[in-house]
Length: 375
Ligand code: PMP
Image (cartoon, rainbow, N blue to C red; front, top):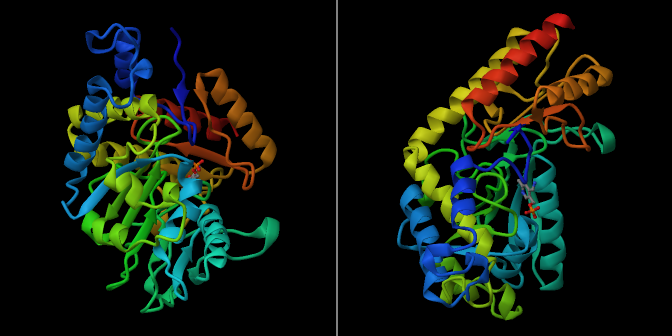
């Protein structure tokens, strides 16, 4: 078996022990004579997995009892529309803070969803500069960037911009915005569970699974119960957050195998020492990568301001696009894949999610040093 060093942005590397466990349990799950995929979502075998995944999330993050932990489908992209449909009453508005491409998408979908329902959204702040192909984002927002409406239904942020490599709450200089009594809603798709988190600061946290939690097809949603209860009822039942909340995310058939994989990943994470251990591991990896970039500043250039540099997605440029192409090709020949930056921005992107092993980062750093030296 020749597994590569996988730096994909998502779907991304999964912890080997979580995959091995799935392999070992694949054909005969819990001595039931069938695969977990073949079980009814209402049977006791699957239900135990489902409950364990939710319990592990609650335990790892210390989720307060006043929050629901839900599994939904449709990707984080569906939540871009579904959250405003639930949370913005007729005549009201929600605030959006845009610090990259995913925030732009969230805003655009929220506009469409609220316009349909007699509500609206507004931009409370953006750190974008330039237009069209020149558009760039190099930092998270600070209080000075924001004009928050005190009566907004919520304030939406993207905690980590996967394409631009811009993240909140990595350094004390770029905390999540203080929204006072207005609920803070965060898309944590690409930085969920990378470190401990004070859940009580948020009204809603949502994250597609395919970066740090498991395979695509599952979205984890952590939502304050009072927001669920106050949610709109004039939208289809399947979109109302109270539907999964009142049915333990088993109203209709959930992505059972995806949730099973989430269980395996969470059990692995707990076994490694939980979120404090994960934070140390991830900060060490990021420090090594940015260290090599900054030590070779005449060759590598990270456009992101130091205070906002993402621990999960490290983006940088080389002197020319031809150099970047060569970098990706030569790295691949050494078993390191997934390094090409997003097609909209180019450059190199190293996604260093939880499952990316420190030894892979060491190998990549060594490669980067040698590559810069050769020029
Ligand atoms: N938000 C962020 C921050 C993302 O990185 C992504 C996917 N790369 C999405 C939302 C969209 O996720 P999905 O494809 O699951 O809809």
